[in-house]
Figure (cartoon, rainbow, N blue to C red):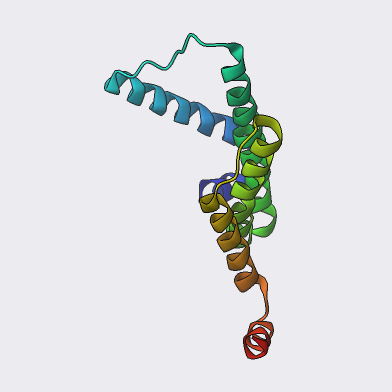
Length: 133
């Protein structure tokens, strides 16, 4: 993984993350140009505020925190934190953007939490729960 390699070389997470986001922006911009998609929208600023908020917290801060976590505890353990990203994102959208929960979102969250329980519970605990049920 690039993040681990860069951190082992002593490179700063913020710097490498910034370069990665710049490259990603350039690739996406090139893709939009090739597909002739117009990105600019002449709409109210209420449309752009959530977009910039999501970009700041969902990309800049979250990726920086995640790659720092990868450097500290390793990629395999840090990967489990990504399971909670949808829960956090939908919770923030509910509070600030008025997201209305649908059955598919509730089922998805239940499956994520069930998956976490299976991954983090000791095998003996799962067998005990199975016998009690």
